[in-house]
Image (cartoon, rainbow, N blue to C red):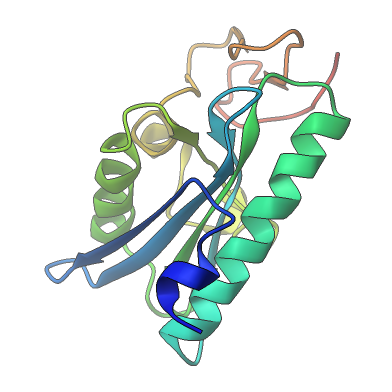
Length: 164
C-alpha cells in the first residue's frame, strides 16, 4: 500500500525533519469538521518511520471521536516525535517542534501525551505557548474556541482539569 493510500482517510499529514535539533516528527490531522484538530504529542522510540506513521494515524482518528464525544468544537489530530524520551529530549528539540506546530497556523493544537508527561518533559510551562498556541501561563483559565472551558491553569501554567 502506498503512503498516499495509507493517509487517504486523513485531511493532512505533515512530516518534520530538523537536523540541528534531531527532531523527526509527524503530525496527522484526521478531521476538522468540528474545528481545528486537537491531540497530544507522543515521543516514542519507534523502530521504523512506518510504525510511527501507523501510530499517529490511528491516534489522530481516535482524537476525532474523543472530541466529538466530549462535545467540544475540535477535530482530531495527533503528533508523534520519533525518539527515546529518556535520552533524546532537549529544549532545542521541543523548540523546533513548537515551530513545526506553529507552522500549521492554528490547524492543530497539542500538548503532552500520557507517554510524555509534563512534569518529566522538556515541555515545561514556559514552552507551552510555543508548543500549543493556546495555553497561557497567566493564572487565568485557558479558554479555547469551544462551547466548554477545557483547561484551567490556576497560575501554574499546567493543565489541571477538563470541565464543562
